[in-house]
Image (cartoon, rainbow, N blue to C red):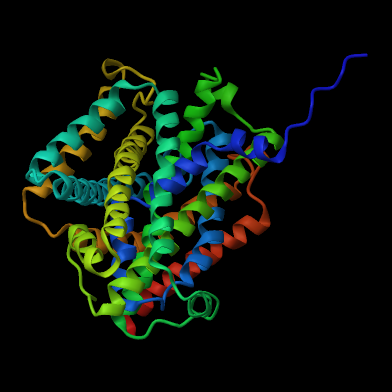
Length: 422
């Protein structure tokens, strides 16, 4: 009688399951996210720390629903939405996604360039071109498995923000009170900050990237045809739930510590208005020392390298799935010219924004606000697709998941309305 294979330890099971969910979660804390959370911490102190607890289950439910769509249908999110919503609406959504992602890429490149310029003393415009070109070449030339592996390990750089907050040394009793006793936003600026947090954390580009990554993962396993990719086993779905749960928890943990770091330094010392990530880093030096400044700067560089391929790639996937183009990061440039053209265009246009003297932090903050207003509309389409028995081949999302995503739509819509009427 053959000996049964040894059961995996809990640690090995977790690390083995980690993949698209961790990459997507880490990409959520891109330089634009870092800047948005820094603005929130500087302006409102610890008053909005509680949002990290609110957004984790909502973000996890949304990302898992998008992952399930990709795993079960064998296609990306736009391909699924194409079957459920009018084509003009989907096309308009693609262009809105491209515009928002391009601004985000521009802000991310500017943040990275500022960070590199601080360290080297070289003009930041040089680094915008250097990073933009380097990231584009790597994304186009590397196969998906290598790119995904690199992005997964880059996620570790986000721990620098946890280290930064711990180095500052908060009063944990008052921090716990701000975390577990929510203070409702007071005034339009505070509500706009809440919309920005929701829009940065539960962001449309992550929906498309998560579903498309599932398709890429299937292709790596040799499932090249749509028929081979259709459906998912209970074990595959359980592993992805674990992956998404860890990734979204990690993302919201980092968000929490960025807000905490800037609340304990900038807000406490009256520095409540910042324009660039460079200003945040420089302000940290006299308030918390060079170590905190260095950790903040290192984090911006690392997460930018992780997030920009995600931003450009999600727009490329959305257009390719909508128009039926050849697509995939495993494909050569000559076989998927239109797909890579969108990816290159988004990065190039983002780099060009740096030379237009647009305030990066202001642009990305309001991009987060726009995402916060647009995401509920897109999530209604995701809900419709994930609840369709035929489209989902009998593996539609559970009632609990649908309720959580529905709650996300309500929460984001209510915050957006409150921003304008209160």
